[in-house]
Image (cartoon, rainbow, N blue to C red):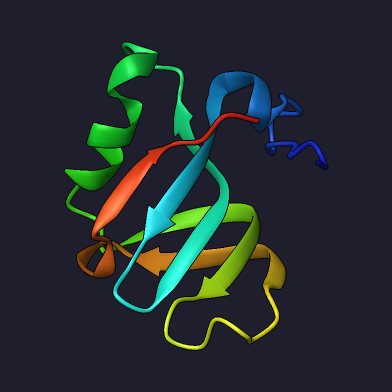
Length: 95
């Protein structure tokens, strides 16, 4: 993974939790990484993402499986946004 450098020269990833997650929607299974600022407890990170007032969650280094077309090849992306309203399940995923 590439390090993200902020304008002040600091490393963004050093100031954020990186969590590998499993996300399920009605049509897709998505596996990738989400980020949250290192504020508060790490154990609350996923619930904070789901309960935010934002509409999307950013997912990096992700792969998408198609539930309705299982024979379709898994797609991989460096970055995508997932609409929070479409998420049925999001849980941590062991590396």
